[in-house]
Image 1 (spheres, rainbow, N blue to C red):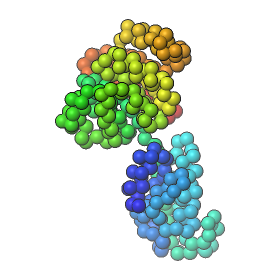
Image 2: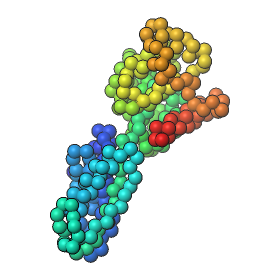
Image 3: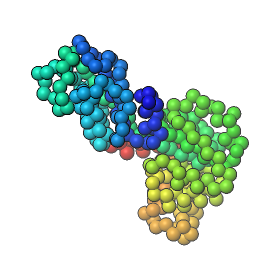
Length: 269
């Protein structure tokens, strides 16, 4: 499998990996600069020449995957019989440097409701390297010509048309998905809040709306949903930065996106 396909496979599986590249070669070596190896937790794809160099790179790559904040590393190898190696002798006579680059699992965000604000928010988040799920009950809202503004997205965009029960999408979203609820229907928003609180593998949950809306929702979540205060407090509302008060869809979208990116940074700390 080509290394590009292997990286894509890891991303689709939402698994950590490391891309290993022969960066420089002086003298003789099994592979030239640019040779690549992709290391997953239990599999590898490609080769940087085998032997001690490859075995050490694989060992180190898996140590990196276990670390909380791995950084790229450059490792140098002398290929001669005077060097004590962990995995046997390589005596090609040259020197090789190998770059190890972590391939983290990308974040996932789900926007429920792709109306005026939802679409503006999608346009902003589509510029980020993440999995972006867009969910709406209305087929016209998700029409191809309307989604065309996302055609140059950096994100992997997944569109879900759910005419009946949009909350059913929740259980199929990737682990840790951040949820943003902003549909056109308050009853739909309420059902999504309840379902999101019952779905254990999700990340943060945000709800757009006024303080009065949240008072009604909170009471309903407690009395009809049976959720305790600590559980209900998982929902953040209002979403966005408090000091950005504009009501235009694009302004709200910028505020919500900035707030979400701040949440990402908090996770990284």
